[in-house]
Picture 1: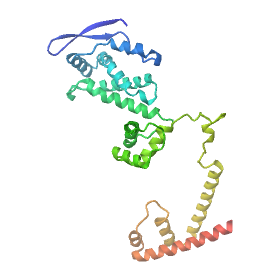
Picture 2 (picture 1 turned 120 degrees about the vertical axis):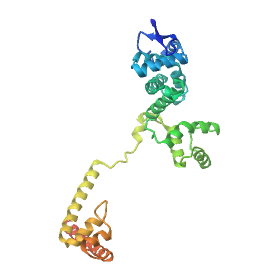
Picture 3 (picture 1 turned 90 degrees about the vertical axis):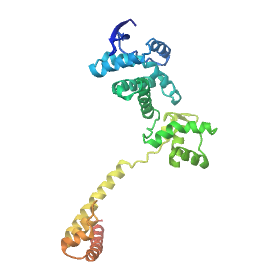
Length: 308
């Protein structure tokens, strides 16, 4: 790539030289081309603290995108180095590096000199966050939850198992589950479930036994309610609701009101509220409620039996 140079004047009137690339960021190639990519990003010089500060000021105050571009280029090696530590998760390294670069660009965008640290120190956290989110989105066939406890398990369970000398993908003994749960401060059931996920997460298209025409997905049972049963249940619920409303219409107004506002609502009124409405005691409301429920049950049963 042909490069040209330009000068940035610092606040102390010193002139420094920074690279101004004549093209966009180098593309992250497929796995086979990563060696060339690593060699390419090595050609971008590491900035001194003064050079870095000058570019940050140029970007934040003057909105100079070229300055931001130079900051990203000078830290591509850092992003690649961090990405390499995530190779064990079985995802394409090229994709992990691309996510690391996205995190780096976010760090450049958010950084300001008031943080009193170098950009590289700040960028590490953005790069790792971008990679972690990508792995959690992509690693499992069935999405792993993103709550803090599950993240902690996902990134530490295999490490702890290796430390304990457990290298086989099998169920953990209760004593080990308890030990790991205590160490990571998570529930024992979460440890069991995550261990199963990490040990058995495989394609649904894997053949079962010697029968190449039978795949794992063919043996899975659909536990959802079938369409016919669902429709029948909805029709029955609608039918019972109509009978219930007809029964309430036959009941005395006060009894119907108490049933509706004590039993058929998500926010039931208190006995005191209803007592105030009808100028009766709390105990009297309770007695009417009991009588009303018995009355409603009798009406409902008689109507339901007649129509069926």
